[in-house]
Each structure stands twice: as structure tokens, then as C-alpha cells.
Amino acid sequence: MPIYEYLCPQCDVFEAIRPMSAAAESTECPQCRQTARRRMSVPNISRTGSAAFQLIDSTYRSASEPQVVSGALPATGNRKTQRYSSNPLHKKLPRP
Ligand SMILES: [Zn+2]
Image (cartoon, rainbow, N blue to C red; front, side, top):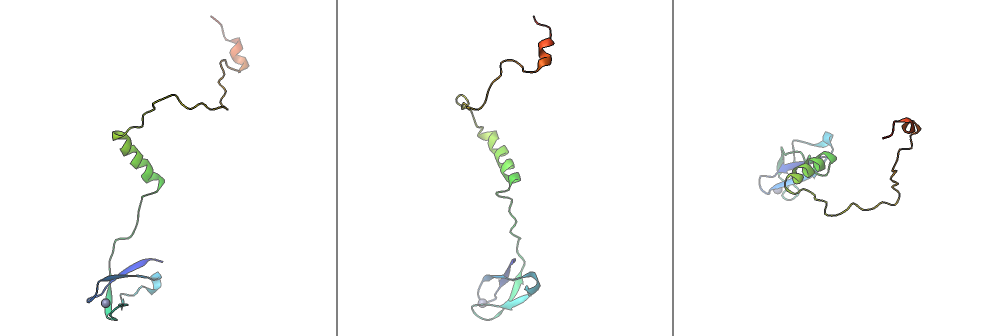
């Protein structure tokens, strides 16, 4: 349910969680029982945490703080490097 802000003339701004169908233009203040009018507020839409924002953030960061590799890559045990091709057609290629 969305959060609506109401402005009490005597107190201050207070929030109320209501379904959209029950969001009235004015409501009673929970402290002083006066009529408080609904206030327009900025919707709480955030890109923080999304994959797109993380990509943009890392792109900006790489301009000033590039990640530098300082050593050899970690050895992986399951990687087998083949010195020669296993394709049988490559055996027919001319040799030096
Ligand atoms: Zn009030």
C-alpha cells in the first residue's frame, strides 16, 4: 500500500499508509484531531541496488579508481590448456 503524507495545520506532516481507494483528500490528525489535508510528495522510486544502477556506478568508478591486477590470475584446477588443436581437420594443414 502506498504511503500518503498529510499536513496538519497545528502539528506537522504525518504519514498514513492507506490503499489507493481509501486515500482521502483530508483526514483527521492522530494527535490533535484536526482536519489535515493531503500533501503531494515525491514518489519513493529508487534505482539504487538495481543491476542498471550498479553498472552505471561501476562505470563511473572505473574512470577514477580502475581495478588493477597486481599479480597472476588464480590458478584453476579444472582448466586444461590444450597445446594443440584436437580438431582432426587441422592435421591435414600444411606444416612448416
Ligand atoms: Zn495535528
